[in-house]
Amino acid sequence: MIRITDRTNCCGCEACVNVCPQNCIEFFFDEEGFGYPKVDTRKCTGCNLCEEICPMSKSKENDADLLLGFIGKTNNEEILRSSASGGVFTQAAMNFLRDGGIVYGVAYNSNFSVSHIRFAKEEELYKLSGSKYVQSRMGDVYVQITNDLKNGKKVLFCGTPCQVNGVKSFIGNNDRLITIDIVCHAVPSPLLWKCYVSDMNNKYSGMIKNYNMRDKKYGYQFSHFIAYGDKEKEVYKGGTFFNQYLRAFFSGICNRPSCYKCRFKTIKRNSDITLGDCFYAREYGASDKDGACIIVIHTINGKEIIDNADIQRIPIEINTIVKRSKEITYSTEEDYRRKAFFEDLNKHNVNIVLDKYFPMSFIVYFKYYLRIVLCKIGLHDFLKRSIIRFRK
Ligand SMILES: Cc1cc2nc3c(=O)[nH]c(=O)nc-3n(C[C@H](O)[C@H](O)[C@H](O)COP(=O)(O)OP(=O)(O)OC[C@H]3O[C@@H](n4cnc5c(N)ncnc54)[C@H](O)[C@@H]3O)c2cc1C
Ligand code: SF4
Ligand code: SF4
Ligand code: SF4
Image (tube, rainbow, N blue to C red; front, top):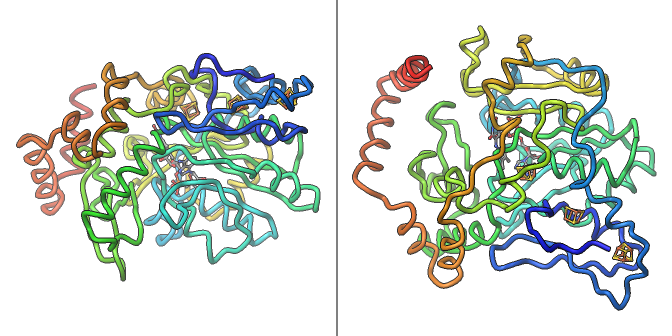
């Protein structure tokens, strides 16, 4: 029977909740807003299925022979603009739906909470584009995927490596299930996101209709967190190192405990395809205008998906990807103030907490507006690349 005594041992994939034949595992949320399983011991028969299914105790590595690396992006400009990096996921998903398959990915719900959702229609695919920097709820997608496969459908699932491992463990080997995992820095607290959304709602009097946490309209190298109102009107915008929610995310102060000791960090993933950001595309002769992905193919099925999609790509050494995209193999570090941060979040308004840990100092404003000016005169990307080259 599953019992979580150390929270780093649970990635919150909910596979155990779905597998329990007695339906006696509740998914409860702790004071940081992360979900964990809790067994009703009165109903538990001790069958041990929950422990057997848990991806945390299984091999994180694929034993397939294939390991191909590419830098790539979709040829569809609309998809590229709405995606976090090279739009490879949405392009692949579009083909998959056209072939009669079913796609599972992450979308905002009506209150902007984030979860995995089943999609069968191409018109709705836009909801899946873009990174949502908060842990998504898997809910009962395991059962939905099982039903789709039973009904003869092909399924494409995209999520974090731990979620992919949860799905693979639950479903077992099935040639009709294709999985894509993302290169994953970590996932932030749903409680922090909920507080942030509520505060933004108050600040902007309920005008916000959509969020894009990685908007590229100011350039891929200078992406923005943008809150949109009606008719795509910008209600709020802030660059990655300006917006306090993203600063909290990248600092390592608000992530799931399992992310600091992530057990899924490897280049030989259990998925069919791995996708990540590629900020170094130009150095290897590829275009990064409006975004680019690194693509790692692990299986023949994954290769087929990429070969058939309308994607431009160039090969790149796997060793280069490992060296340049450190998040593939290394866990993010925990901010030493994490405990105090969550204590404060439970006591005070999120605004007060973010201002305390991520103050909006003169320097922060100065750097942000300087970058905007550099963008406008067309020098931002050039200078950023030069600085990176100089540091190397
Ligand atoms: C929380 C998070 C952290 C990331 N960290 C890194 C990193 O450190 N380095 C790096 O190179 N790349 C990182 N990425 C991946 C990167 O931002 C792109 O998602 C990836 O390159 C694929 O890009 P794309 O343009 O093809 O598709 P996108 O349009 O970005 O893909 C959208 C799909 O990504 C998946 N997705 C989005 N949000 C979530 C979520 N919260 N949980 C699970 N799946 C989600 C969904 O299936 C969604 O449908 C991260 C993404 C997320 C969500
Ligand atoms: S041991 Fe079996 S019955 Fe008990 S919680 Fe786990 S899956 Fe459910
Ligand atoms: S990692 Fe997933 S399967 Fe394992 S205990 Fe946590 S929620 Fe359950
Ligand atoms: S860092 Fe690891 S544990 Fe955290 S969400 Fe990503 S894959 Fe899961």
